[in-house]
Length: 262
Image (cartoon, rainbow, N blue to C red):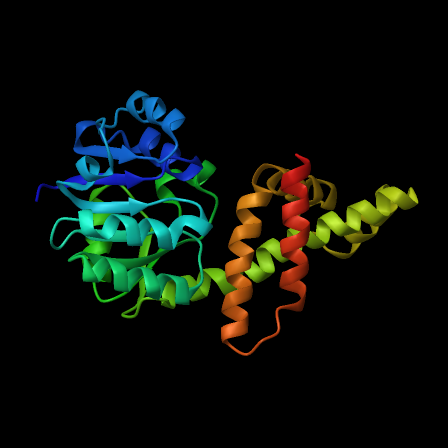
């Protein structure tokens, strides 16, 4: 096994990391969508004929697919991993989903690490906060720092701990966005949007509400479908804890509607 890094998935996160890290021939990538592969080569990643070639000599793998494909990626690619390869599951999914993925990776001879990404990768880039957990967390922290990530913290020895923090935190972050969307839709329909925003601005000065509303709506329009998939996992997380995810289900609907309308 070499010290090569492999990216699985080349969406917003993968492309941002590759562009900023400038891994060059020390990294390769694979995406099931053929149209993304030229962009990988343009980012300086070594080309691969298939997933097997991508993973053949990789000691560190960053899984950066969509939430609904995270378990499938781990299951499909686990048999292709080198013995001892570190599989960093950076996808926003429920702890139970990550534990299932861990079983597949470890059965294939790899070492699975739960990684939670706590902020948008753009503009944070390689300074984006990463929480890691699992038996191989210390190895992953060192490997991620060597790859250029500067804000990595171990939060526990068990797979699921990092993702639990992410999923539960997302209930608030994405929920505020979804409530903003609902509020603005009603305020606009009533013709009182400016007054509603001004009243909120007068009661809370953390950020002017017109700026916050515009930001939240832009994030939903740009990433509503992906965020809805993530919130499905948050709902699973709450349900597994015995909490009925009433507001979270509403957030899923609003995020998905915003993404579909964009």
